[in-house]
Image (cartoon, rainbow, N blue to C red; front, side, top):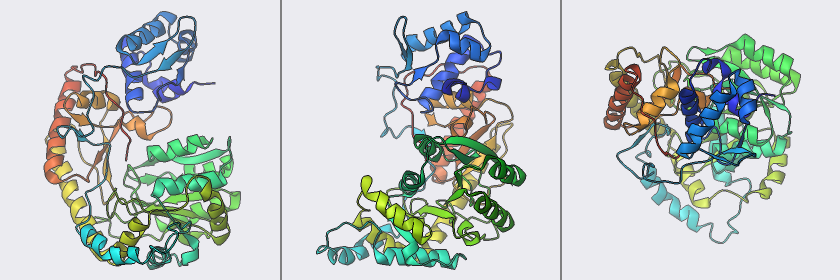
Length: 467
């Protein structure tokens, strides 16, 4: 069986790599969080067999990592992932000199403050209640249901559960439906924390490719038919990170195929409202099958600090979700629900702000990339980011070099299973134009370093979540 380390490395990506290069690749996996602190690594002999390398090479790899504090070794025992104890070179999360491109999220909508003020009387009226609500406030469930109906999926409020964000919603669905050891179809690339949630619930991944041009629909449907996965996690609108949108005709076929083979489709609509100039509006995936489960949130259209999400599902599953929910939480914060009610009453204002900010961010990224020889921004009609082709498998090298210029840039494999996508990198279009210009200049410096062969080894850096 292939070890997790070698799965993440991707044997094809490290063929012929020196011990120093292998150590740098493993260091990148640790810094990105793809290998977790305390995780047991293969023995030197086992790693040598998996990579078809000499024992002396793998011994040298672990020696280099041990010297820098990235593994802990017990003589005659195991080798485990670690982080250096020194903090001299660590990144302070509040260090404004750093630019963090692991977070693809905008600042708050201009209407957030006023909505908060307007929400206070509604909150005051709730003081006589217990304060707990497994389903969520009726007014908010009504507002979310109306938005589904406006987009082409008639929905009742009793099909909605309010959660503390979309990832919380996904975990509730997986806790309710989960079957350890079953297969899960996931897009390649995909949102890293969703993949990690599936792994946490014991699923084995069946990847299906997505690129800026969209899905390989034949591969997707064949994987459903042959693999018969228990769940399929899809991001059909402004896919994170590629920005692709699944057409209505494809949604119908995927929904029908999944229903026929008994696969639970989980559609993540966190990015569904992030339109710049796509020029058309698809129906929600849930419009094509009553059994599609949808998760969404306010985080990308209002503010990441507003932890409001939801689940749309059929009534039978809603009952099961409500029965499972008390095992890890008793409801969602009432103040945030009251604010969300106010915000959703003026969706045009939210979408206008989103479109304007994303348009500015996209233009700023395009201008910055134009100053970097060999890089070209692909068509990006909306979403959180642009999915950049680097032209060669150097994503991890660029990511490491970027750290030395004060830029946190997750490499392409962070969004994949099996160490692939080394040609790709996600560039958010969500920062202000000024901040984006600074980020693109730092990327240019890192790009020049890599192509000049000057990629100094990065010291202790805490890994960042990818948002």
